[in-house]
Image 1: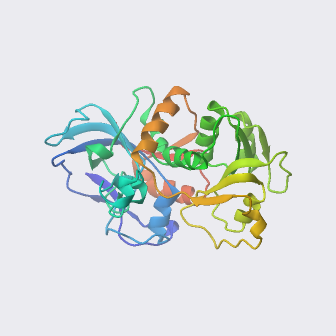
Image 2 (image 1 turned 90 degrees about the horizontal axis):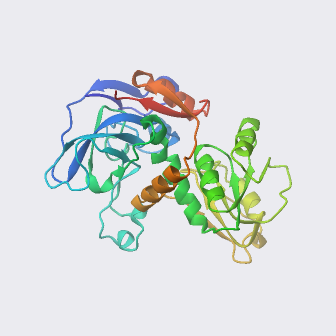
Length: 333
């Protein structure tokens, strides 16, 4: 099969992705093989390519927003049959018996493996995964639209879940990229008011179009105190700013994979039971719940499709947030 691999970490402009021919993988017991139809391109792929995250496998096929069609099944497979649609997220495996898995927190599993980091990912024609870590996909959407559901969709939904907000609450979104775009639509569907804070005029316009209750910049005064908020920019200096806009008992969720140093000089920002929690990985439950609600509400996202051979260019524009929509590689026909 054709696949893009990372053998040496370096800036994306120096093309760390190399197109190679690899042996076709085949499923073992309990596994399925997915003919990859599309794979989203994520900032985390760039973090791995450039060395912000260490290589866990060398060479590695990146990509963890995999969607496609099951074309081979291993012995004992029960959840999927040949011809079914299937998707794979960042979480590729969890052991099921460590203390975190037993608490329902498989995203923190001691023995977890992650797609495109520990095991070869979706910048390839095929991907093999244990059937229990594949998600069933609806037949109603093109594969290119479904691919981002596997990361900004599922991860955004987990960040939203971590806020604990219910109908009638007020949610703040700092930054308005792909995950926030999905969160806004889910939150509005659930009766939650959404306040978007972003510097980008393009993103302000997009947030208003999707029904945000208030949109402004970091210098604008919020009209209310927030019950919960999610911070996406990897800028530690913004943590105190976001805390200052939380109401009593509010929770701030930190969404980035990496962040510049966080300094909180004023205890009053945390007093009255305000909380900070970080987002770390996703669970299968997050994926199943997000797919269900995204299908129900016909969730929307602008995408920019790149042919498979243009993967290096897609990674560059994603790294620098220059894409017109969420970048997706079209791989299968």
